[in-house]
Length: 442
Ligand SMILES: Cc1cc2nc3c(=O)[nH]c(=O)nc-3n(C[C@H](O)[C@H](O)[C@H](O)COP(=O)(O)OP(=O)(O)OC[C@H]3O[C@@H](n4cnc5c(N)ncnc54)[C@H](O)[C@@H]3O)c2cc1C
Image (cartoon, rainbow, N blue to C red; front, top):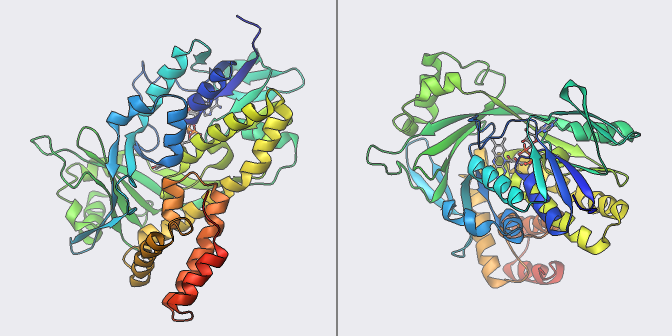
């Protein structure tokens, strides 16, 4: 091997290989340690969500590392939310106004495998599977894996997911404010297979939502023309995963709340009974590094609930932010890691909060008349003030503006719109406020 610096990376999920490719492009040699066996060789369940929504922040990173062209043919554009009412009526709520303002459904396994192939093809990255990190001995610069296997390191970057061992190791060394807040709701996946003729059963150019107040069902299209549905549901209580388990209860639930899906999901009872319930939580961690030695990113740093479709996109943006800092500070890792943590932690908190707010919007507000009037107004204002006013959903999904800025502008915009819609200010005053308070978006 050359005398180029070696960096260890924990976790070959979605974010790990993206970071590894950026590092490789900077000339580093990377060893990735992954707990699972190689998913390209050993068939295993996709784990969490089978498919995901990819949008601007994720696409930017995939373009930067040179893999977007390969992924693109396997992306399914979704133009908006298709709302399914109780009476079976549907209507599309577009995500944006421009033709390219769509989000893309992508297979998690497909993306993960392609990312692994890409990093291995650089010749600078080796992925060591079946290596589960259990601790880090900082004084002796050793990573300690299962069965007490020890491997020395120079520097470690951790993308080992929401229950991160790396995060635990960093937290143990400094008293960092860390909270993991369970949502109280979990999720279960179900499937809508393709028709006998191999067609989609419902419109493939939308993310389907059955909003039902306390809970909701969503469906994203797959390349094989099936849909993966996710039921987001309370963990406990009268109508919850813990109370609904028998075939009668499952059929009753779906006949009562999702009647138009009963014919779409032929394996409903079996899938409901066999598929696991996933738990959902938000991780707020106020510091992501330990000196110039350890840093976390991705879900390890900011696991969020999936209602803005941003967990992966935010994790990929972490890698882009790190890439810029490496370019800026050359090999001053103390600066790179500390700046990454200092400047980017607030962005993690901001998207975590917006994702929580979006759960209420998706399961409850999308059919609310006030929500609908606000949405119409947002689009009109976007047309009239193109440089200044961008709907919050669009800022998150179609732009790469830092999430803190999105959050701040979103609050200001919301106040202006609500003041106008409630009659407190005139249209003229609304326009004046936009021009005065919202600086042009870079
Ligand atoms: C139901 C659901 C739907 C979602 N939908 C979307 C969406 O539509 N859009 C979106 O952007 N995001 C979505 N997300 C979020 C997205 O899945 C995550 O944000 C993303 O996977 C984070 O990538 P990561 O690499 O940080 O973590 P992960 O992808 O979880 O990868 C972590 C890796 O680390 C490995 N690992 C863990 N512990 C160790 C250890 N001790 N030692 C070694 N290796 C270890 C794991 O095996 C895994 O391979 C969704 C999440 C859920 C749960």
